[in-house]
Amino acid sequence: MSTRIGIVGLPNAGKSSLFNALTRAGAEAANYPFTTIEPNVAVVPVVDRRLDEVAATVGASEIVYDTIDFHDIAGLVAGAHKGEGLGNRFLANIRETDAIVHVVRAHGDAGVVHPEGDVHPQRDIETIEAELALADLEQAERRLERVVRTARGGDRVAIAEQAWLEEVIQELQAGRPVRGVPLPEEAPNAARELGSLTAKPVLFVANVDEGSEEVPAAIAAHAAAQGAGAVAVSARIESELGELDDEEAAAMRAELGISESSLQRVVRGAFELLRLIAFFTAGEAKPAQSWHLRDGLTAWHAAGEIHSDIQRGFVRAEVVGWRELVDAGGYAGARERGTLRLEGRDYAMRDGDVITVKFTP
Ligand SMILES: Nc1nc2c(ncn2[C@@H]2O[C@H](COP(=O)(O)OP(=O)(O)O)[C@@H](O)[C@H]2O)c(=O)[nH]1
Ligand SMILES: [Mg+2]
Image (cartoon, rainbow, N blue to C red; front, side, top):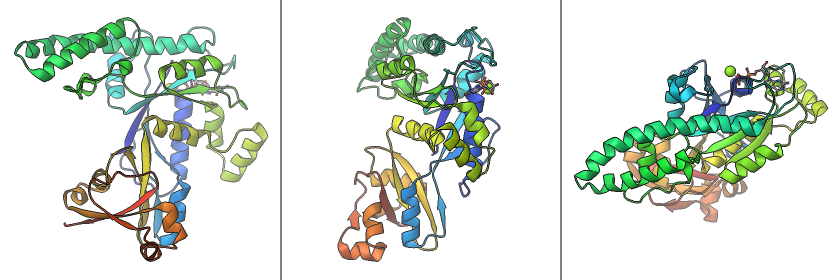
């Protein structure tokens, strides 16, 4: 399943500019499997040079990078949890995402109106976080009412969930995110049941002045205190660069002193946040593909990413590290060297593994 990231931030923070830059990056990189693209969904390939080498080594027919879906979520303003702005619709959209990219205005362009009058990243972050927390608080209180009734009947899961919800409510009232409240062993799905917004991992994107690549100290400190990631991007420049051809864009980047890939930095930052590892499938005259999986999961889970039929019929897997495969010049060489191994369903996948699943259809 592809990873879904919601882009949030105050009006004029630069969400749509970042989104447009991501969309163009997606449109340019050929060969990605996309289904329907809604106007507010950007499908962005996660470019991985390791896959290029694997594909060349085995003589693959084409290269298909895994993708990440970014959703431009408009309408988050002070009061959104009460239905101000696009209010509830925005909240429904964001509940379905795996992680949040929080765009914070940090550029000083006086030509761009700030909804609060001046540029103040710390205050803006707190405004957005307060909305998310208030939305969670309402949801948690409603859920608690229901869970209490089940808990009275002696249901162990409900009792654990009730205790967790009570702590969650205290934390939210103190302005702290749900993320920090450990889930009870008996109710590991409690956060998902709640659809909590402040339980989602966050990547802060500081929308900085052209030519700067530093995350401003206030944003870096806030992110660090939360265990969140932070990157700096000039959203407007990136969206303009997206309109140029590669050569022109490279020349302009050099002139502005922007390193190659601030968009890829956003994509990578998001993946790091979700603790995802990459694995590959590749064969002669077949597409070479990259996939992502939560760190710690197994060959059986990897098979499920590829196709539910392959997972259902899982027999065993042939696994080789991408570097070993390239060094050996292909599967036959890797088999000879003993770097291609047979693994069972419980094998813990490692970043950069190339896998061939043997299955009974
Ligand atoms: N100078 C400057 N302007 C920007 C930057 N990013 C966005 N803007 C401008 O700010 C305005 C609002 O940006 P937009 O992406 O639409 O914000 P949204 O409301 O968060 O979607 C637009 O006029 C953008 O061109 C930036 O990095 N630098
Ligand atoms: Mg917008």
